[in-house]
Amino acid sequence: MDTIDALHKSPAKLAVPMDALAFSFDRKVGDMTITPLTDGYLDPDFKFLRDIPDENVQLLLKLGHRDGPPRASVNAYAVRAGERIFLIDTGSGNTMGPTCGRLFESLEAAGIAPADVEAIMLTHVHPDHSNGLIDLATNTRLFPNAEILLHEKELAHWFDDDEMAAADERAQHRYFEMGRRQLTPYVEAGRVRTFNEGEILPGILAVPCHGHTPGHTAYQIGTGPGAILVWGDTVHVQEVQLPFPDVTVIFDWNPVDAATSRRRIIEKVVAEGLTVAGAHLHFPGFGNIARNGPGYALVQQPELLKM
Ligand SMILES: [Zn+2]
Image 1 (tube, rainbow, N blue to C red):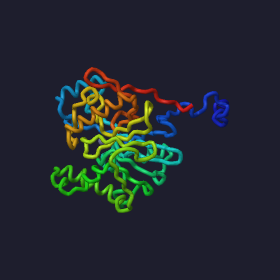
Image 2 (cartoon, rainbow, N blue to C red):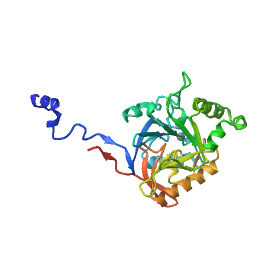
Image 3 (cartoon, rainbow, N blue to C red):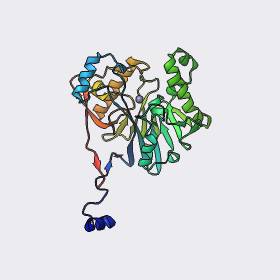
Image 4 (cartoon, protein in one colour):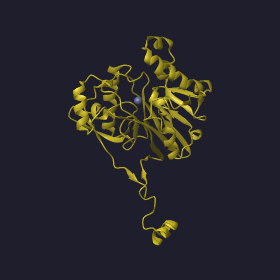
């Protein structure tokens, strides 16, 4: 006992440093570091997937050793470039039940203060991506120094009264009203910037992939092999939509365009040897993609130990 106590008191004497087994999910691209941030997970009903019979979904999940409803991680990503800190998506705030809402704990664990975030790139305005923008009790910005970047069609869509009137009641409330509420404090502060495509921050490219929403956008960190494409909701359920990319979800604004964009983005990833970072791939959401028959498969990458 004495010896162990002494070792704890002088950790320098330990053969193995105490932090040797600390895991890092960080990825480097050039001089940028990408940190995955979990907000939690969702277990949506089978019916959330379209264009495939329930029993086929069940079979695919069983093949993926998942006995139950599909599970979707909810991931955001931080990008550190020198002293600059950017976020891609903000999680769900406290709006999506007890399995979500952990983004701010993840930020703290990563050593990132919300006030230090300079820009937030939104893949799209849906509750699991943008409801972490404000404090709903006070309608104030949780990222007081951040500029919000999103596709011009995305901002226009959610603030379009005709589009809102044409939507069903659930979408009106959960998407339109909440999206406006989350964004308005940033709009009023002059802290929203829209784009079409191309380089929106140094070394970061916007890659529009519309369909899931009108302005759904992936963000490419760096260029060439080793670059990371943060692809948002290109895939919701990896066990199903990678082997069968034409499967859509009930939340797709335009399911045909969503499926077309999915195939185009996946083919880009395969052709260019990119690493993907998926908002709903199992945490930390990184991998490569390989063609597999008429569909695709995720190729896991080794995680890194902090040594
Ligand atoms: Zn989503």
